[in-house]
Length: 71
Image (cartoon, rainbow, N blue to C red):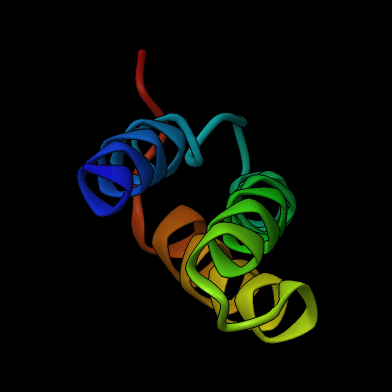
């Protein structure tokens, strides 16, 4: 059950990762949110906090940069 909860929290956090008006703002906020979520998931799953934060930050920044601003 822990993996399901972690996945649900990660999906929710990544869904809001694209907050911002410009490409740079969305990339930075996505990276920050992703790093935080990755650190939590990495710590819970045993992968490690630092590797989780690195992967989460990269995925979050990529997701934030790839989205368009919502209006």
